[in-house]
Length: 313
Image (cartoon, rainbow, N blue to C red):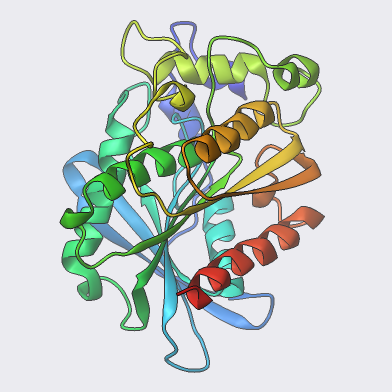
């Protein structure tokens, strides 16, 4: 599919891409694990740039306040969306099993929209939700228990958006960001790591050729993987920012794993509280395959992370 979708000039054939991008409609209600109904609906922020989010609301037995998760999907900055069937399924499962209210953001895609479009869309989504809050969210959403999350490229976006939000916390008077959850975040640099060399062409889903294509189309023209969008370790922006506790998930068959571990160590060196969770047999994007055993382990670990925040002073 990669060879069919990507052109030689590093652009993407959206007509072919959209043919393979199977979408799940909303509004809808689905039963998760034969026990918890989850309702979905789409909320539009700025139609001029196709900025919107899909809202996932579990039906619970009471009106108990639920934590709120703002989620950024993966796809190498180039592809996918909240209504892509795999991400609709992932967020539905998370909403039911955590449980939590989830807003999954649809941001602009590269290479048509390069850096910093995705970060701007992410931050503008936070501002929109902060401004409109309960006019677009269910009444039992606990805005004081807000978590930012994302996987792969969405994990990269989640990091940058959280840093900006925490640097400008006075602009978000309703949302209180309690945690950051990064599932196999997409970071990098020009050098090749041991895992990238060892797992290239051996690991499922992702290889170096594919990640190189992503990085060529996302940073500003003329920039490479040493740009701070990819190489966050080269940025001192977090040292003087009060960031929430962070959960980082790493897979043993993910070529990006060395960058993720370096991110954890860098965050700790900057004085931040970070938890590293490793699944030795997990490949990149394992969480969108519910039949994989690590999926349930991940849901349980994310639930623990949220609960630990809720009981913390």
